[in-house]
Amino acid sequence: MVKEQGQKPIAQNRKARHDYHIDDVVEAGLVLTGTEVKSLRLGRASLVDAFAAVKGKELWLNGMHIPEYTHGTWTNHEPRRSRKLLLHKDEMEKLIRAVEQQGISLIPLSLYFKDGYAKVELATGRGKKDYDKRHALAERQANREAQRALSDRRRG
Figure 1 (cartoon, rainbow, N blue to C red):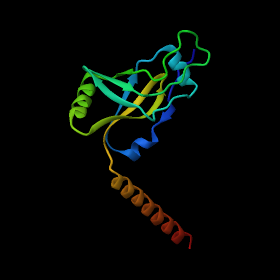
Figure 2: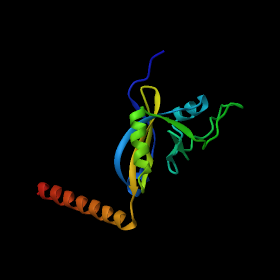
Figure 3: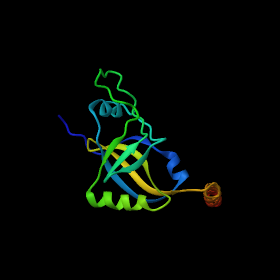
Figure 4: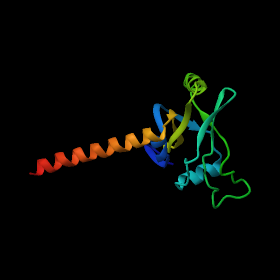
């Protein structure tokens, strides 16, 4: 059997970068059951309401939706169950210290297969206020207009 190589994206949390100031990004593994992996291989998952939480000295991913596998039997999984995150001890302690600070959250940015293993990209971030979101949108539009003006000027 040929071993998978490379990175295959499954799901992305596009609202995360809009709703949070992203500080640090870490890659973590997931503890999954067989039907969850099969459902992910079909490209079916949602990170919209997902967040990571600390329970004891472990990190858990809550709210991620992996639909039931259609060909599964009584061994099928619960779609929104908590899933344990796999990290090195020093990375986990660093994230736990960050979360203990007021206003810092752990947000999953993307879910993907890397060399056959399911991985999630976790970020620490602070929530943005409405005026921050408006400012970022205005800045993006100004950059687009400047690029458009430069390209028009080059064309002549």
